[in-house]
Length: 330
Image (cartoon, rainbow, N blue to C red; front, top):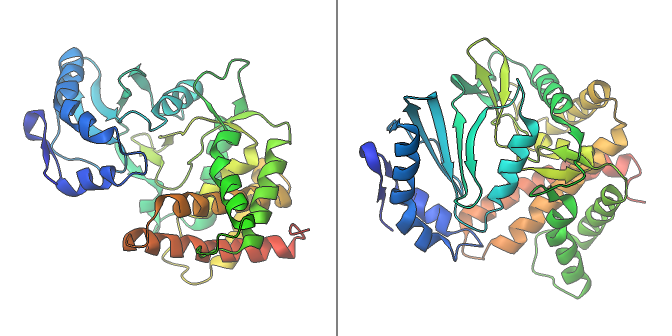
């Protein structure tokens, strides 16, 4: 694997290229990488952008920082085909407001977005020594209340939760058919699938962020907070709390995840006016869905993914115990 050179001396490291190529739907990516330099040139020339050398940690999209002579500090985000990027564009457009990063321009056909760059842009997760977990959770709850809105009559590119849940239902069917090579119990998957069916039948069709956690809330220069990177989902609001439960473990409170989770659930229930049982159920669905995705994507030789899956399963065990105590297993 080789690095990819872009304009202004910016280079995408070989490790980032390899990571993107590891995606389960990677058949489009090699050809896309060949077109990436020219694509970046087009965006930069249109918006008079000079790229900065610092590249954030990349996942399955390319994110570049720069300064536009027209818009100031900006973020250019580009993705290969097949990455559901159009839903991110739709979600960001739906949420536009004072607490969400400003979308300057988008091109669904080219899977690209130009956004303002939040300055200083320090993520909430970096404030562990100054913001305790309860305060961080209160910030997360406030962001969700400001984001959530009824789904439009024409959802466009927004993704219904039913589509996201397909891998969970597929894993349940595989376990029923006798698949036995997974580090997760059939009972856990059955319970997660049953709760997922309940979310789909609830009648709540709100526009959801889909990935709200401590890394997707950034500090603004005025001391406020800005949300980034919505997935653009439609469905029950309880599901939108699940990602938070698996993230942001404070270093100052190590080892006692169960107590932290209980406190977070109580805080979300109070701040969002949502029953604890709905929050627990939504969190369980998310965790089991993440496990289902991992079971679909990983291979026996993918040790890094196996380690990540192990951490997810530990979190699942905590949430599962809480669900059982609430009677949700029945």
